[in-house]
Length: 356
Image (cartoon, rainbow, N blue to C red):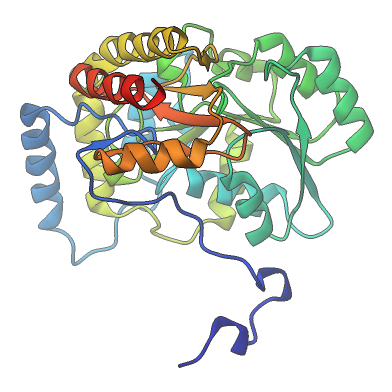
């Protein structure tokens, strides 16, 4: 059997392994920040109806510009956005990849502030973009002065700011985002995959006078739509035109467009679980504090917990109890998604026994 090393693969891919968190069939899945509440049956039936109608025309290519969906996203986001300021793709990772294809590439450099989302270096690598991760402050926050100083020193073409940040849950203040924008003449992308769980303002409010600013979102988290793979972004129409140049034609299927439109039509029902998720997030934080661990303040649907002497052992012990959480690269830490009330009860109970 042929090995990967036997093929004439790109030299920068030699020794690399595919990205992916463990997909293990257990009762309680708290490792990839999915919405554990699922889609209400009434909404599911609307999605089925919409996609069934789209299926009749599957002999034809889908709407390449998907203006109806882009307009629906613009209406959802508000801020007087128009369809021409919206782009969408198969998950926010594809949005980010297309962004890097347009604004990154050979001889170009992207930076971010870590620890942060582990897909950024992967996307940079596949688009032949140099990537560098600079450290956050000790509490994982960022200041305007620090970000501007780093940008001035590193001279990047792209700056990525994840807010709220994955895996720490830390939000980024708007003055920090503006400082990053003013510090150079490159592109600033704010990844707001978890913004619906935050009480802070969105960077979308900054778009009007900043044509080099991009804000990406996803339907995977708050909308409980991870399996549909729908991500989107808001930006100046010229940025959207750049995305249209690098995308593959007909990249967003007719079924995906129909499902996303149905979900947006039922947005109020799908987003109704957010207060429950926030409540369980706060309950997890308080519960871990009582166990003598440190839960970092989070504005996301997960909590980063510090203080485990052997995080790997804790991960394995929980897995044996049908609970999966996320191992991270931060020493002594695990990241835990906020689940249902019953899931939180089970998690805290098992950890109390384990750490006793």
